[in-house]
Amino acid sequence: MRGVIRLHDKTDHGGEVISASSTMVVDNQPVALVGDQVSCPKKGHGVTQILPGMGTMMSDGQQVALDGFKAGCGCSLLSSTSGWGE
Image (cartoon, rainbow, N blue to C red):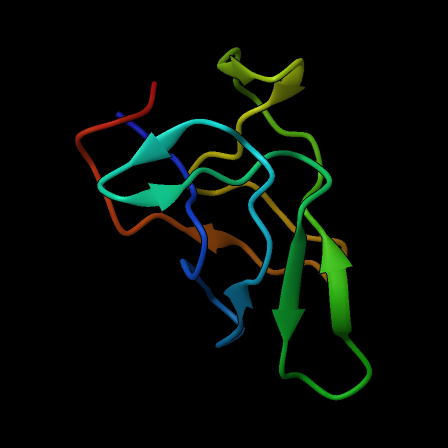
């Protein structure tokens, strides 16, 4: 199972999810959706958005971000929870 991405989850570039607009909350953290923001520390990357990926989970009319989804800079999102997802 791929875990959901939540506010403050990390990326493989050393960045983190900095916005999570879902009303869904998992383990006291809001869940990130496609279009939410990620901060990337790599030179020239900065703040980008979570891109659509393979998954069917929805919240508030938007796709829920899951482990392995990408951000606009090319980084992969890393879920810090494994009990929730698909």
